[in-house]
Image (cartoon, rainbow, N blue to C red; front, side, top):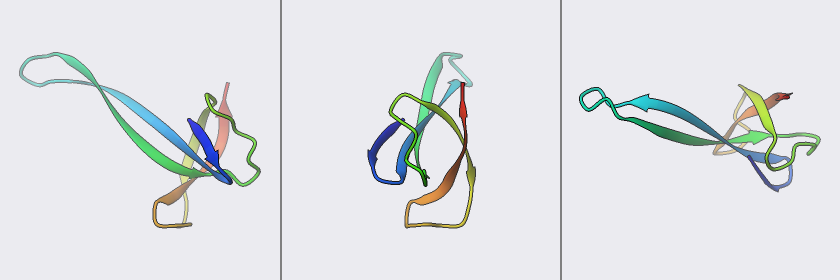
Length: 68
């Protein structure tokens, strides 16, 4: 997670996949821009987020809670 902009954090979600033919495992990742109203989350925190109305061109998610 990255928190360089005010009220926005960038959350990286990683998923382990397996190639159908060669059966090798690999990591696929995707980044989401998530709204953080209070600005309380810092880099390295694990958070859970849910969908909401579009707040900007890329931001369509908001933080629901921190995962401990």
